[in-house]
Image (cartoon, rainbow, N blue to C red; front, side):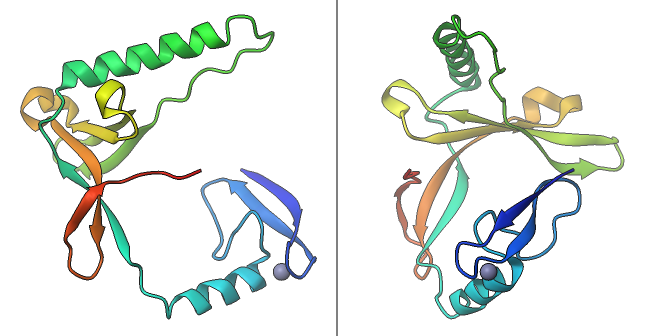
Length: 159
Ligand SMILES: [Zn+2]
């Protein structure tokens, strides 16, 4: 667990920010203290979201392509950091989503950033370890109108 002291950007009070750990308190934020964050969250409740992000199944890429992209990304990272004195490994995002009590296993979900003509798209592949081939699912993040649920396009991340 990592907990650090932070100064709230609004009220300037010093507070404890939970950077990581199994217990994350409510209204935990890297910029605002819990009191200010709670105020912000309460105010935002009156503003309904306009867009929704959803992962939908796709056949525009196959597992082979996703695996190749993962390899390419790792190789590029190693090339880019080959002269660095201290090396940080590239973090691979693997999620455990669901748990099957009967089979005693977690569903594995991996995130892959699109490349080439699929650049800026975010793909996921998921499977159950005991049944990799049949349970394989490939999804891509898409954007929907929250009110009409009409598809707008691929979900884009803005920096
Ligand atoms: Zn504050």
